[in-house]
Length: 102
Image (cartoon, rainbow, N blue to C red; front, top):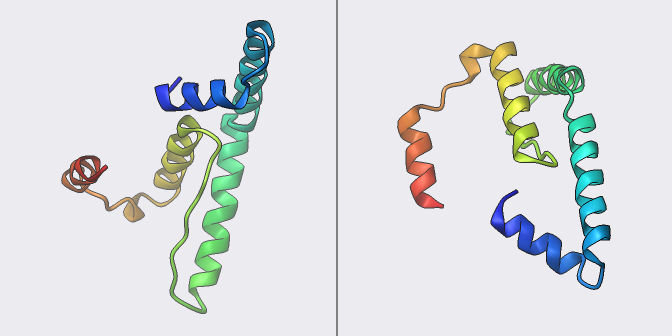
């Protein structure tokens, strides 16, 4: 887990014994895996692409997707790329510049 997430988890579960904290981590991991199943993320990505493309017929705009984990975000992004490879126009140079910004 990300050190920041770990510290936030500990802060939010302060007062819980270690056994309870471990059970909560296990439960979260199971939920994240269920929510992030390949089939589910594929259906969500397909629905979002269809919705956004219909919306663009009437007006310009942008979209943002928020997921419950980085893993799920990466997998949704991969689905977007699979569905619309021409839309994946961010260059490696742009990604590296963004990393430096953060």
